[in-house]
Amino acid sequence: MRFFSILAAAAALALAYAWFLEHEWFQATLGSDMTQAETALDPASASASAMAQREAAAVASQEARVKVVVERSTAQNVDSAVVLRGQTSAARQVEVRAETSAVVINEPLRKGARIEAGQDMCVLDPGTRGAGLDEARARLAEAQSRVPEAESRVDEAQARLDEAMINQNASARLKEDGFASTTRVAAADAAVAAAQAGVVSAQSGLRAARSGIEAATAAVAVAEAEIDRLTIKAPFSGLLESDTAELGSLLQPGALCGTVIQLDPVKLVGYVPETEVNRVKVGAQAGARLAAGGQQVQGRVTFLSRSADPQTRTFLVEIDVPNADLAIRDGQTAEILIASEGADAHLIPQSALTLNDEGALGVRIIDQDAVVDFVDVDIIRDTPRGVWVTGLPEVADVIVIGQEYVIEGVTVAPTYRELGQ
Image (cartoon, rainbow, N blue to C red):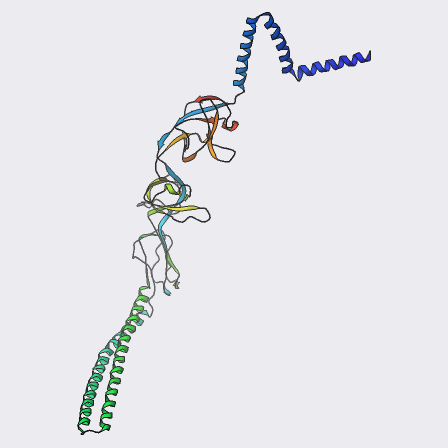
C-alpha cells in the first residue's frame, strides 16, 4: 500500500515538472499528437493550421529582432576645414634694455600708451661722456697732424739715399781709374746702407702716424656710440606694455627700460596634428572665433613648421590677422578653422558615433536586408546640427538610436525617420 502512495507522488511530481519547466516541449508534444489526429480527420483544417503556425513563427521572429532608428543620409560636397584650438599672439614683443650705466633724466611713459618707431623711451644722464668725446676728437686731430711730418721724413730719407747712391757710383768710378782709395769706396757703401735704413725708419713712422689716425677715429666712434646709448629709443611702432624706467632710477647694462608690443597685425598661433598637417598650406584662407565675445576674424596662413614638437607630435602654424583698431589682445583663446580642399561628407548626429571592438571610431549602418555593418569614419567638422564625416557610401542608412545594442551581421527591425528630427 505504501509503495503505491510513493509511486503516485512520483508521477505527480513528473507531471508538475513537465508542465511548469518543460511547458513548451509538453505543449508541442500534445499539439503534435492533436495535429496528427486532426490531420487524419480533416486535411483542409490541417493545412490552415500549418499556415497559421508559420505566420506565428514569422511574427515571433520579427518581434525577436532588435528595433533601431535609422536615418537615410546622402553625401554632400562641403568645404573642408582643419579645426584647431589656439591663441592670439603679438606680432612682435621686445623688452628694451639699457646698454650703459647712467641715471634716467626724463619723465616715464605710462603703459598702454602708443609709441612710434624711434621715439625716446629712456634718456640717461651723459655725465662726463661729452668731455670724453671731445678728448677723442682732439687725439684724432693730433694723429692727423703727425701724418704730414712723417711723410716729409720719408721724403728726406729718400733724398739722402739718392745722394748716397750717387756718391757710391762716383767713388766706384774713381777707384777704377786709380784716383780713389778702397777706404773711400767703403765709406760710400756705408752711407748708402745708412740712407736705406733711414728710409725704412721714415716709412715705419708714416705707418705709425696713420695707425694713430685709425685708433683715434675708433676712439671717437666709441665715444659717440656711448653717447647714443644714453637715449633708448623704441625699435618699432606699437604699445607700451609696461611703464618705462622711473625718473632718477639708475640703469645698469641689461636693465629694463620698457616693453613694447606690436598688435597690428596680430598672429593666431595653433598646433596642427600630424594626421592633418598635409591639409594645411601656407597662404590658405583661415578664420577664427575668439572665446571672449565670439568675435570672428579672418586672415591667411603665413607659417607652417617643418619640424614637429617632440612631445606632442604637432606642427606650429601661424596666421596673420589685420588688427588696425587693436581690438584683439595678445593671449586670447581662439577656435581656428583653416580652409582645405572640399570633400564629400555626411551630416549625422554626434550621438550616432560609436566604437567597435578594436576602438575605431565609426557608425553602424544597415543594408537593404536590414543587416548591420560597422564603417570607420573621419570627422572633418563639428557643427551645432551634428558632425560632418567622411568614409560612408554615397547613400547610407545610419543607425542613430540603438547602435550600441547591435553588432555586425545582426538583422534588425529598422524604423526610418527624417533628417533633423
